[in-house]
Amino acid sequence: MFFKKSKECINEFLGYRGTEDLFFTENNESIKDISREDIEREFRNLSFLYFSRKIEQIFKDYFLKVKINQIRFALAFGLFLYSIFAVLDYLLFPQVMYDLWVVRAFVVSIGLSALAYSYVSKNKTFLEFFVSVVIFIGGMGILLMIILIDFYEEKAHIYYAGLLLVVFFAYTFSSIRLLYAVVPSISVVIAYLIADITYIKTEKFILINNSFFLVSANVMGIFAGYMLEYFFRKNFLQSFLIFLDKKKTEYLNRKLYEMTITDELTKVANRRFFQEAVEKELKRAYRERYPVSLLIVDVDHFKEYNDSFGHTAGDRCLCSVAEILKKYRKRSYDLVARYGGDEFIVVLPKASEDYAMNVAQMIRSDVEDLCIKHIEPFNRVTVSIGVAVLNGKRIKGVTVKNLINTADKALYIAKKEGRNRVVKLDI
Image 1 (cartoon, helix red, strand yellow):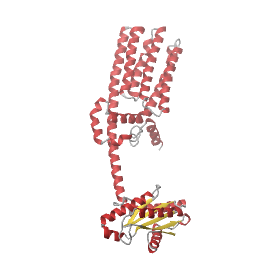
Image 2 (image 1 turned 90 degrees about the vertical axis):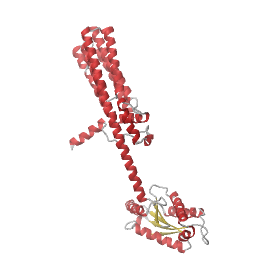
Image 3 (image 1 turned 180 degrees about the horizontal axis):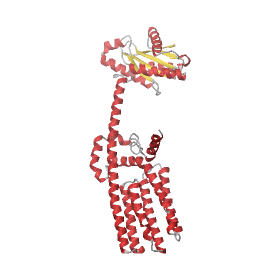
Image 4 (image 1 turned 90 degrees about the horizontal axis):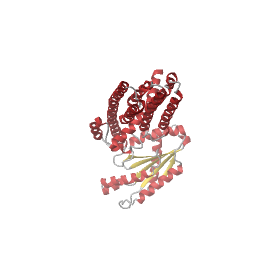
């Protein structure tokens, strides 16, 4: 268990995460417009280490999300080593060590500023650039130390190996992309050659030897950096394809689920979903002791309407009533469902008796105001509504069936009293 937990902590620190949250950022709102074909085309650009503009922006954000902790660790560890070499200054060059320490302190302060930027700034677009600057300043710091040592004695070439460490750090350990590693590394090599030829003037065979190794280190570094970025970009495209496939599957599953819980005609919830949702709602209401109101809305004389105007007109009528009902689904937990042919149900959790009655009356009034023509003597389409109100203190033992039966009794009374009205009964 300990080793498993340790591995999770290390992975989190180094940035090893799943791809689920790696592709969406504030800058990538248009990611939904990217298709599988767009990603597959990008495989042709892999060898150039560059994608089309839109994909490249997403890649940059993805790269920083994955690599941010690795870059921070590399920068912190590099600065630590840079500081530790102050011991070597003390052991080898005590006569100039304070000057060397000033140089090291300056380089470390610049590096710490870049490290702080990686934590403080919300927009980390320039992080790789700042790391590149730190690498360059670190290399120039070593070059300046070589010059300072050479001023006192001819042992300056001893610190030449530090330049090799800078090159190695830039291409591999720093985790930055190839372009940001190439520029400071080559710049440091050129600066070293100019400084050696014009000022340090080491022996010819030492200069040739140093130049050979520095150039070779850059060539190998470029190759290593190229391969690292190439395979990272390839992994990015493959992960993107998996991500798109997963999102497509989730979308299709969601649409399929919506089809199973939605009434095909009116686009409100169907009876099956209503049953499941209200059972869960009653359990929550029992735990939290809040009231639940249920409205059964019945289209008055709908059979006569269908027989007179036809089923197509009847379907349009039901859809119009459903649109009215959806207006009053104002809270996330309110529910509108089609219960049967011309019957709808509205569930209002946490609603007071007055609120439920007010909603019912507004529904009745709005349907009447639609002025859907009906045959004589009815003139226009209306609805009758039965309201069942369940007090929060008396919820225990009450079932969905109890709620429906109570609302149905209220609806029966509304119809008996002449329709186009609202009747309420308590449970």
